[in-house]
Length: 434
Image (cartoon, rainbow, N blue to C red; front, side):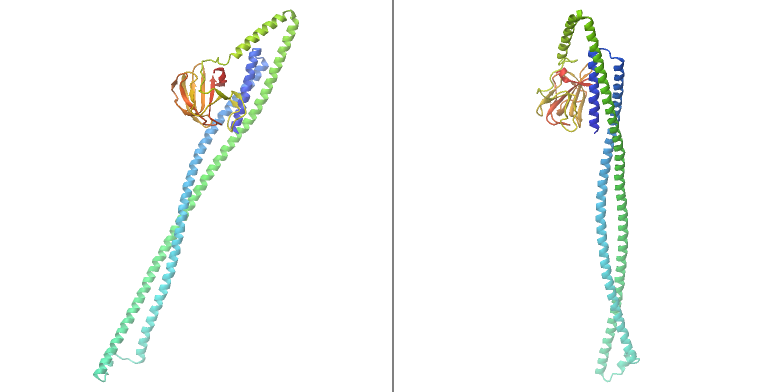
């Protein structure tokens, strides 16, 4: 959109200047009306220049915004990776908690089983003592002394040993069961503590995840906010460009109308003078024809008679697009061609049209690889869309020196050399030189 406005404004301004030049050559000094119209066009041209400067400034701001947006997007990508890692950690921690729950449930069953066994042993122990109490207060010594014979005594001693061993076994089992209960309880408490810590870790990770998500959202919001601001400025510039286009078009029509009126007045005056001086008409017509012929001859020889002498800038001589207005060959290309296109295969040599100093040698998105050479008398030449550059800014070059190779870089529909000539900062037809 912005390029379209720039091309339109430049086209109208160029047309205005062309009409002004033609008028000056035909009728000499401009009238007061012409001067007023010229001032108006100059004012509009100044406004267009200021608008272009504003557009350039906005372009730099948009470029800075793009760099900032790229940085924010990179930051967003890193944050998303962090979020992905944290999510995996959360899933792992949740699985760990589930495993703790399972182990705690198992330990609870073991705890209950150990407690049940302890209770059973304790009941057995109590039952035996109840049996002894029911039989009366009987000691081991009384059992031995009541033996009827030595054989009976041995039997009683063996019985007492069995009872003692049984008592010891019951006591040992009771102690082992109680110890198992204590161990199970301790392990259960440890697992419970681990579960609490795992939950705390999970909550901390969730908090970090929330902060990271907030940071991502803030970065996106900032980018969107800045984009809205610059988009608004861009739309305002485009609106001003539209209005300026309308003003230039109106001024152009006004100017052309004044040119036509002045021309008609001059023709009428010439006719009246011819009628009044009929005797001198034939001689005047002869003088006028001679002057026109001289002017025509001078105009036809303008090609190749510029301020300096130049040579053809390429090994190929096939011109594919001339200087001036044209239909845009591709998106982004100008409708007012500021040079000539010379069709040639990629790699074909490009020559310096005249000796001079390289003022620019680099790359742009529209020109591709390009070279600008300043010669003398306010004249520079431009070579665009190169596939390779053989000179650098500041180099001194000679006429005919190979400075680059033909290519199709930048906004280009095929391999060719765009050759342009600049006089005092304004592009002119290169055919006036080559």
